[in-house]
Amino acid sequence: MEILIAQIFNGLSIGSIYVLLVTGFNLLLLVAMIIHFSFPVVVVFSMYISWVVMTLTGSVTLGVVGGIASAIIVNMITAPMFQHIMKDRGSVDINATMVISMGMGMVITDILSHTFNQGFPIAFPDALTGNDQGALISVGLVSISRGQVLTLVIGVLFVAFLFWLLYKTRAGRAFRAIAEDPNGAKLVGIPLLKTGFQSYALTGILGGVTAVLMAVLLGSASAGLGDQLGHKVLAVSIIAGLGNLTGGLIIGLLLGILEAIIQGYLAGSWSNAIAFIVMLVVILAKPKGVFGSKL
Amino acid sequence: MSLTLFYYLAITAIYILMSWSIYIPYRVGQLHFMTVANMAVSAYFAALMAINFAWPFWLVLIAGTLLGALIGFLVSNAIGDAPCFAVVIVGFTFIYLTKTIIENVEAFGGPLGIFSIPKVLSASADNRTLLLIVAYALVLITGFLITRFDHSRLGRAASAIFIDRDLAVSFGVDVKKMGMFLQTWASAVGGMAGVMYSFIMRSVSPNHFTFHLIGICMTMLFVGGYTTMWGALLAAPILWGFPLILPEALQSWNIVIYGVLLIVVLVIKPEGIITRPMVKKIESLLSGKRKKV
View 1 (cartoon, one colour):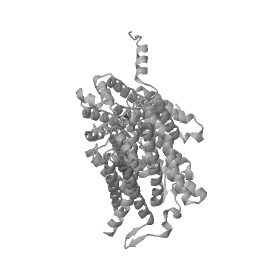
View 2: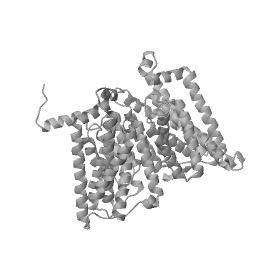
View 3: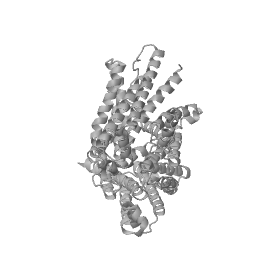
View 4: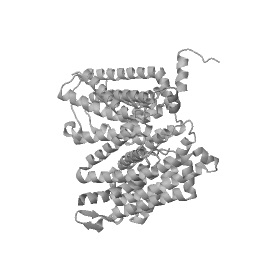
């Protein structure tokens, strides 16, 4: 029972990371109208940049700033490329953006595996992860680290902030109007291009924060991490229903908990495989999502 | 024939078949990456049957192709009419699962794979010649079938689904059946490529069937042009051969080169280098017909 409780807490922490990634993916899908399959690869790239800054300067604060800044910069640099494709929305289908994003993922992943730390996985300093300070709470077999608590708290706060932004502010209404009906939004004077770029900036910040939280929670990263996260994020958003933010939140947390529980009882590669089998069964049974697509 | 030339020609044929296996379901707008998993399953099936049960090459080739088709058919029952993204993730998941099972089950050789797959003919030179003839015969047969499909009523129905699914349905096109047919066909081609790969390389390893393979085939298809089968046929030998002539230090960056090329071509020329109007123009030139005014 104690193992189960510990694993559920683990699952909530990793689940909050999935939620942040899926929310970023869905925002880009709804507002910028792109399937940014490699959004998690950009997040892993930001983890690497954060590690480089920390290694070079020895400062955790600068590393965190560097990680967040790199995610925003990558997102903003690639935005015109996607916008160029989507301006011919009538003749070019949305799948083209997914293929371009996959190409971007190929490039980033290969650069990470060739250049940074000679291709070996990177490890973040204890000053960031807090691993040297031991567990925050330890009761029997249940041990909760500072990283887990920090990830969960910041993850919840950030998702709450995003939902507030989307549902309670003027900018959020513009985002949702474009998601609902791009032509109608254009008619009532919402600038599609500008709002699209804003969504890239917002998801850039989201990606940067996620990168830092992942560094704190996982303590390490490898070049292949982005691809694996990319598959999970796409799977979660399909199961939830593409573009469904609330659905993404629920399924993201459920996936985190499912993975953590399996990991408590099985070896690493098999636990991932079982999580994928569960996702596969759900997708095969309901290819259009459990909560319905918002596209 | 030198070993380098043999491998270049043989692997080019495999890439053409694999790019076509992605092209076939993309006729209805589905990126069916499951064909890479089909390739892996049939390649391992071929290796195990040839080593443990001494099955002859021809029997393995037919059985491996049918195995690919069977798996493709079973899965297509669920995703025949699924949206592109769902088909993509099902493909990725199958690749991941196949790789996990291969790496963790001892009978499949674990992470190292299976070696010493028997030759089809005992003399090495004859073996290579035979494999090349078979590989290009399969390319010819598959290419012929795709051409016939593209020029048939079924091909036009597939094009209608690609352009406007709802309109195609209102014209009476059965989207699910078409998706199932194309996915099964593509999986059969993937399985066929897997068997050939097994006998050409004489070894199989889980590292051969990764997301890199998807990236390479996708680049060949989208850079060459996804609206006709000729795009992959043109792009495969060039894109596969081009990194081989680069300096050794640059060769390991081939995935970066492919990725950049894929992005640049899709941004500048979204339909790829070879387009349908271009093919029609060449066809009319070759047949000596002139466009009526």
